[in-house]
Amino acid sequence: MTNAELVTAADVRLMQGLAQRVTALCPDLVNSDASFGELAWNWGKGHAGEGASWRRRLWFSGGDLVAWGWAQLPRRVRRGDGSVKDVTGAYLAYQVHPGHAGLVDEVIDWYDATAGNVERTVLPSAADEFALKRWAAHGYETDQAALGETGSWTQLNERDLTEVEEPVLPDGFRFRTADEAGPEAAVQAHLDAWAPSTYSAEAYQGVRRTEAYRGDLHVLVEAPDGTMASSAILWLDEANKTAEFEPVGTHPGYRRRGLARAMLLHGMHRARAAGATHATVACLGAPGHPEARGLYYSVGFRELSRDAPLVKSPVR
Image 1 (cartoon, rainbow, N blue to C red):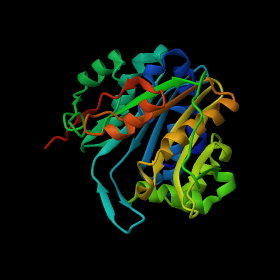
Image 2: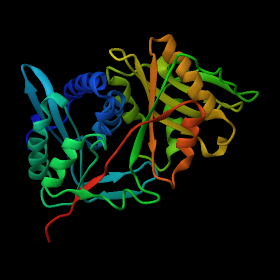
Image 3: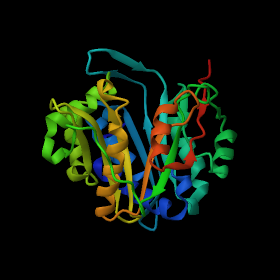
Image 4: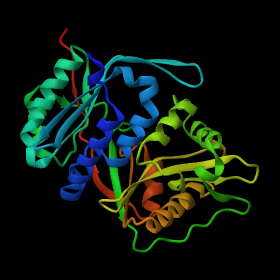
């Protein structure tokens, strides 16, 4: 593999452009990990530590990107607590413009050749009937484990921002932005909410360097003792006037106090002031993961689309 095949910041900007065009045409066809905000978040936080295991291919038509594949190959992941996880399979994030749907076969062939004889997973949209048939024709099957009671598939939720409830925080808590709180506090807020995590100061610097990041749309809730108890980043897609929450997290010691709910409402008000008319957020969709889904439903989100997790086992 050459360096030209690694995923670059310029590639991500092209991928985001395709995400914007697909969102405008058929928002339910935007694959998991292929949305405007998710692309920036995943590349920003991960490229420094995991970028050497990423491969990509781009397909163009008339100068426009119409399809891409981003393969994450087997690797060793080190978390902030010192633990190590060996990822033995491959995962593909991808997107194909609906006007060039036939390219999905080329994406699949490239993925199989790039990943080799390891377990391969992918998450096409459940609404993409054509793609699902093509993946099946290439030997991919429904990932039953991912669809189980506590499975890992996600659903995308949306709501409009016409009327947004006013947020209410408990006494002594206040809203902050990452611009106000500073990098160290923003990183610690994420680590507290998502431990054990691979996130780091270096990862956050990568996130901040993405073109889509705005510190004024990175919102936090500060506790009376100065702890950043909850945080979320909003990614503003100006073309579609949509703000995407990713990630959203709360410190375990401050949960069940209404902080995340208030923060989401506050974030929606800030997004609307920035020009957004809609908001989206993803969550685990399996029955055994009701917490985040219930939170998002409580502030007006409803399901827009969901993953159809597929897997192809290696040949023994």
